[in-house]
Image 1 (tube, rainbow, N blue to C red):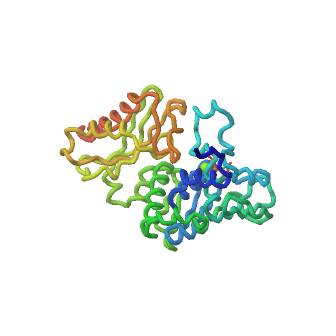
Image 2: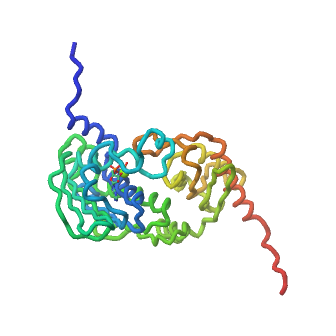
Length: 339
Ligand code: ADP
Ligand code: MG
């Protein structure tokens, strides 16, 4: 019989990193979510070679204290939750404390950060799971993280990466979702030296949708909202005549987090029954909000799947939001009283 052994720490870290960091898009997702959790109002993402050789994320968020930068790279170290109770009440995008540790395990990372209360900023170099240096550096309040040479030390993972264009497309898709779920944040994406996305951060979902998908798509959208028992659905749905051959333009968010949810999808399509032909699908950008304890986000490392305590409330919120918006479309225009 083979004996059971505890794996060396570095091997364990590589295994854990594999769950969080699959490709450049997963790095970008984690970093931008950190920026949003840090209260940033503006985030810039730049990638080169599909993000494989270079990813930079710059934000104007709260920054990281010098005395905390070591912990930022330790796995299961987080400023977002403290104990078990907090796990059932998660209001931030992150909480596992795994992203920076995982990214630094499989890439070369530079961190430049400063908080408002510090005079000097901090520059950190880390790679292969080790912090190489921590130094003073001048910088504005906020954080810049540069990730170079993803998977340089794990050639087996490198082999699974697709062509640069496909990796860059995945990054772009991930940023679209983040932009749509956070219209209050100005997001800019510089892809191989060209700006391909720039949202204003004016907190208007329609102008955000315009920035992400362009005019033609945005002008086919109408507002939809519904709230009951503390669960609400709000955002934009497509007019019936704008329906599509696929579900590719259905964006659902739960408390600002992009999720795949069959419940919400079924509710949306139920509301459109009779308004669109069979085999066509509505589009939507809908944020479902509910008290944090009514949704379990701790189901999946990438947090794309969530569990609802009450599926029915979610179904109803989406269904009635869409149904009422469609009904309003068909109402005759209100008569104006003469002055
Ligand atoms: P998590 O987001 O789950 O807490 P991470 O590994 O992504 O774990 O980040 C670890 C910690 O580093 C965070 O809890 C946060 O305190 C800090 N941090 C990471 N990125 C930023 C950032 N852009 N601005 C401010 N703090 C950050
Ligand atoms: Mg995080």
